[in-house]
Length: 559
Image (tube, rainbow, N blue to C red; front, side, top):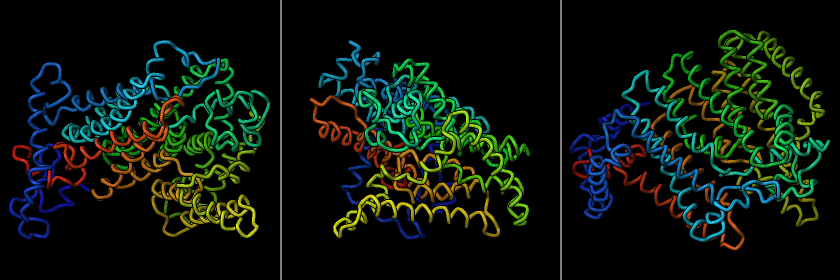
């Protein structure tokens, strides 16, 4: 729903800024006079910033990154490139790098000033925190500047995705060091052990190779196909972590490409514009920073599911089920979308009998694929037990994780076993999420399969004992391809994405033990929150996106 539809008493400027009808407020009431402190606070700041922006637009070195007409998306793309370069350089100082003897870069002399000197660490922290927030500004401005491109907006957004991704490809892992856990699980398999029943911590020197201690004593949540690739990567890389990260990043970027292709194709099939779903899901900085810089396999997983729905929409049912089966073999959690893939084959209004046939077909093909991969990997169906025991590494800030740990702690006061009690709570909520999935699949009439797949994954995420920031990225494509949402919902999503990226930056700084991690984190948080406040309340070009245009719009010459 467009801002104009949400705010009938407003008009929309070419910049995307909502301008309230002069002399009125919402509801047709006379507009209230802003307090002098407000008029000369935020509004004064926006007026000064707008003048600075206008002056910068005439400076030869800056005019390619500031100013320009609102129909010039290259300006936003250039700003995003600068932001990505800042993230890249920042990651070289505070990104994750193992300390093992096999590492090529852990003791590289050019990097030492960035990683062991206070000035280098502070500078890189500043670049990482500020660059990630600046990338959000470029993303918001990209939407505003590409709206006038019509059908060409999709090409503009695709170009932005790849231009922004190039520097991120050369960054050290940020926001997470899960990629080293991937390599550790590949090493487990190479040693003849099972990541489903054995732990990374059983390997000598595992900590120096970069694995997160949180996952070092947990069963692998990944499927046999991905674990086979992890084993292949460890073998080919010769245990050199930089080579392993490069190979993992290649498939992560492949996941970005697959998501971009399938989102556009599914939007066209549904008759909707593809620009907004592509922008909100794949061009989203939360997505790019986690998939490319963070080297996560979630993009490949979601891309595989979307490809399955795309093939089914094209009446290529077997190929569609095979694509989703491959996604399940990467991360088994997406087995929850299988019922809705079957509904997509026969239609929402099909009889229960036809749905049962579709489910039997999809289930049989998936079972055969997983059995074949289980045989090839030697892991068989160990992923089922691993999924059932998920929660041993519960995060206290996941609601169910917090509840389970609290119940276990209370029970332990009365002689109970904390692990058993918390495990029972996790199992109960897991059963509730499965019940919701069955209800969604069996209810009449059934909703849109893509949307209901999003609901199923939402239930699995919210009711899980573990919630990672990038789990939000599982959901966005399904909801974005199904419908448009009120502007207030979009704004809430923007804020949430900003907060999740900043939380990842602050939480996942890799610095030497001779520095105060607390103070470096505080520094990163202050920088990030300050720029976030600037985007939301002060920036004359982005304040309207967050609904603060009333304050920003009072400044003369900013409209």
